[in-house]
Length: 320
Image (cartoon, rainbow, N blue to C red; front, side, top):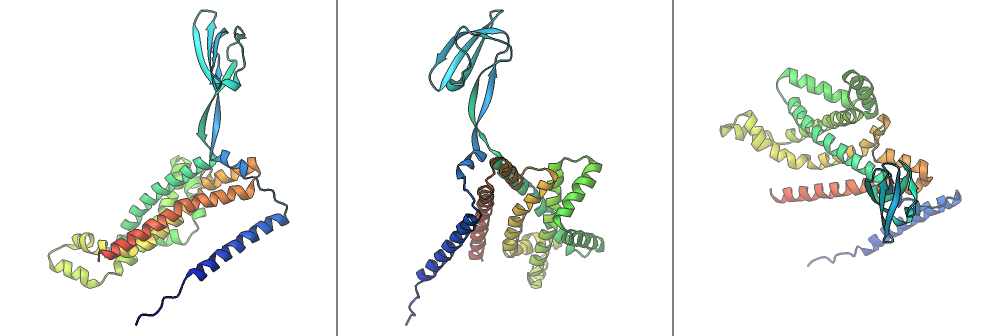
């Protein structure tokens, strides 16, 4: 006889109620400080219509204007008879037909959509995370295997690297890498930031790889060696594929942490997502709105990563 499954909807309802209470608490807190929400100011920091001035190349005269409403086609004729045709927004037109125009005068503007500061900050965060994560993974894999090596030099150097990086704050490492190493080697701030994040990530990935390899039963390696595989072949074809399934969850967690750690490179004037948010606040005075948007963008990056890692983990588990 099967037991009746207890309904879960009351618990989901309780979750919704708790979230509602948290939202009401936030709203009540902002009302106590008389905060005025200005969400209408936020979209321009994602995308806005940029204006590009259209200037006369020389002293000329407005010969003809073809105005279609939204756009005007202006034909200028210079003293030497050379024509210049400009397309400008209809409502930005500064001259009429037969008007004289001096060299450099703005006839009108062209409008086009451009990415705002938050969009550029998001892009910077993404590429820094991807590049430093890929380099950190390679460093971590190599260092993790060195930690397991029987060669004393490889083991000692890899252990020293891991302990130094894990024992010091990332912010201090960024400062040292940019202001000391970067100055000596004349490195750009982007290179220094990516290198510092990659070395920091590599140390933690190394420990994840080492723990994953050591979690595989020793008999697996012995069986592979008995089949004629050497140490490198055994590690590549037998140990690492099994270890990968076990290290996937902590690796995903490490890369999610890396995305959030990119906010620290703002201290060396890299305009990633957090720094873009701070700059947007100084011009919009919409503190809470901008920070909520910044937090949402980090979630947009990290939640799919977490979901993808979970699906891959379940798929690999089914293949066992």
